[in-house]
Length: 32
Image 1 (cartoon, one colour):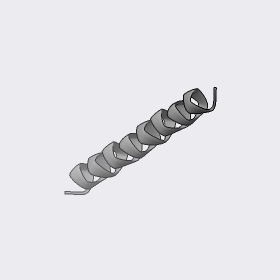
Image 2 (spheres, helix red, strand yellow):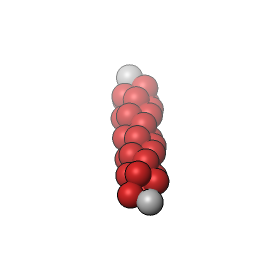
Image 3 (tube, one colour):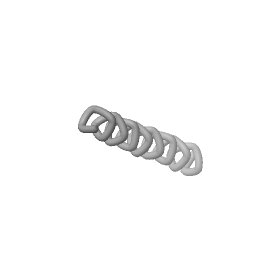
Image 4 (tube, one colour):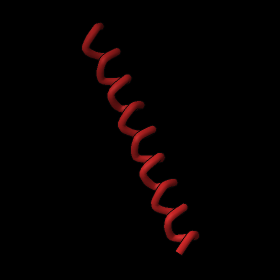
């Protein structure tokens, strides 16, 4: 159970990082 839970946490964390990166790139392109 603990292994599955940690996998879910890592997956959610990766999704958050990816969304933040995409949002940052989108903001930079919009400013130009």
